[in-house]
Structures are given as structure tokens and as C-alpha cells.
Length: 362
Image (cartoon, rainbow, N blue to C red):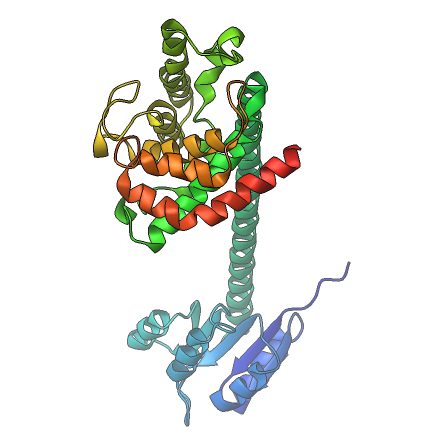
């Protein structure tokens, strides 16, 4: 494979220096010369070189002005510039470097020094580009790996939620629907400025993922209780209630085993608090009002709604309107009044989801 020759632009108002430079460098590089900065910029509209050799002291447009324009243009700011200055002119050297030049050569120009400075500068630029390319590739690899991990995490969550639903066969699709309702809730809460400061502090993606685990504690309930068509005894109801604390325990074990503590905390709050009631008569901790975590108060509404409009061994599915009437009666008792007001605003969209899911199951 033939290696493409590098392109070097040489800018100087001295025809003698340009001729010498082209003669020395032309054996190894494609050299294009310019006797002014203005002609350089006209050429840059067509070709971007690999390197620019630039005299600082030129009439019309100084090398300093040229460097400033080069570095301010995204198309040319990364092109390395070697400036040419008079021997011993320390002030010019400092100013040239300050403006972004990569190296300098002093006059009179020695051919061997010119060749070596250009060679070294181009090698350094090649290494920089290789590092940038490696960094970009590494970033893509990390993104790809992160995406793979995220997909695996979602798959595990889906399997866990499906395991719960397989045990509780009559609630198929419950966790998916409640997740969609939670998303609608959060959007509406922002729109209507309800608890917006708190929800804006959440990572919504993690909140929605973790909502899938709100009923994970049901894996601990005996089939004879879970599938019982009649009224539960007091002892059986106590076992049903325990799914909240068992779910919390499962998630705390998950939290201890992973570094994703934010996700686990959202999941824990969903699991342990979605059966608390606004008036303090809920379980497992009898929390009241805003002492109940907001995630639990949100899930309490969508969980009850979905239970009402779904068929159970002990009841038929309620129509949407009747389910809403039941929920309204519990406003301020079971449910947070501010959230019920929001739920009223999204009820038509909620009904569409519940109706579509029911149709799919049929």
C-alpha cells in the first residue's frame, strides 16, 4: 500500500526562503508555498494541509493574525503550525506558542533542522490523532458495553416481574401497565407542577425500571392464598401484607450485591410503601400523609386502579367509570388528594391503556 504524502503549506514573504523550503521538503512532502496570509486562506477553502510553516513577520497580515484566524476556525484549528522567527527573539516565540503554535524554527533556516522539525511535528500530530481515534473508539466501546449491560438489566427485571405474574396468573400484564401509568403520572405532575421539585430530583429511567419490582414480594405468598377465590382469613391477609416487607428484603439484598444503589432505593420504596394509606391505616408501617414516600403514593393509585379494572378470582373487572368512582371515594383516605387531582387529568389516557391491554389478553 502506497503511503499518501503529507501536505505542507509554507507561508513567507521571502521568495528565497520559500524556494529553499520547497527544495528541502519537496523530496518527502507535497509542499505548497504562499507569499501572504491572504493567499493562504484562499487555498484553505479548498485544501486543509497536514502542517503549516508560517513566518511571523510579514507585511499586510502578520503571522500572529494568521495563527489567530487558523485557531478560531474549527476546520483549521487542529492543523499544527510551526512558526518562523528571528534568532534570539524570545518574545516572538512566547507569543507564537501562546497563540497555539506547535513549534518554531529560527532564521537563518538550516535544511537539516527544517526537515527534523517538520518530521517530529508530523509524528506528534499522527500520535495525537491516533490517541483521539483510540479515545473515540474506547468511548464507543464503553457505550456499547453500557448498552449491553442496560439491556441485560432490563431483561432480568422483565424476567423477575414475569415470574411474579406467572405465580399470580390472573394479573397478567399488571406490572407493564402500572409502569406505563407511572410514566403518565410523572409527565402530568410536571405539567401541573405537583411535587415537581421532588420528581425532578429522580432519575426517571431508573424509577420506571424499578417500578417493575413493586410486587416482587408476592413470590413469597403460598399458592393457596394467592389463588384463593373466597374471602381471606385474618392470618391469610397477614401473609398477603407481608409481601411488602419481603419485597423490601429481596431488594435490599440486591442493593448490597450491586453498586446501583439509586435504582435499588427506588425499587425498595415502591415495594414497601405502595400499600400505605394517606390516613395512616395502610401497611406495613402505618405511615400517614406525606410521610409515605411519594413513589409509594403514586403506585398506590395506579396499583388499585389496575386491580379494579382487572378480573380477579374473587371479582369481575370493573368498568373504568366505576373504578374511578371507587378511587374518588378514597380521596384523602387511601390516596393523596393532590395526586388524585392529577390522576383525574390523565384518566382518559389511562383508560386507553387498560382497554387495549384487556383486548390483547382476550
